[in-house]
Amino acid sequence: MKYLIMIQMNPSARAMWEGMTDDQRAEGYQIHKEMVSRLEASGELVISEALGDISLNKRLNVQDGVVTTTDGPFAEVKEYLAGFYLVDCENIDRAIEHAARLPEAELGLVEVRPVMELP
Image (cartoon, rainbow, N blue to C red; front, side):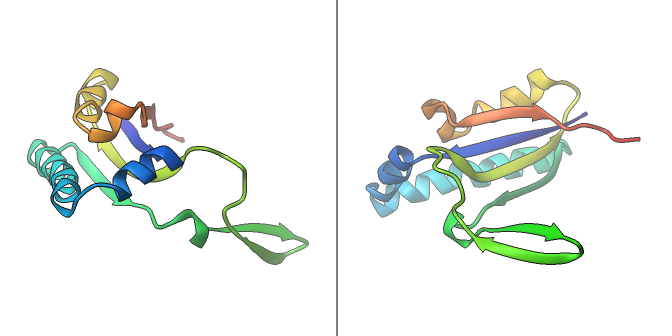
């Protein structure tokens, strides 16, 4: 079954990240590289990506076939999606096992969600 491991970000976590030394940030990146390597080796990785800054988002609206877009960010939210891992694991416990290794999990910023299989 597929699960989406979502990594959230918020202003406090962003400030903490930006306040780190280059070596500390490199260590954080290394944890993610190791996660990708583990998931690839186990055959459980479908895809993983970090997302661009929320200020680059576009929200779209289609009315009568006309597409209009609005620049982001869009809502006054404290947390936003910063990246994800789409994994194919035997069960949610296995997905949680992977997700718990992420440094963002210590900040309560990681969520595991089943992916719906549409007919």
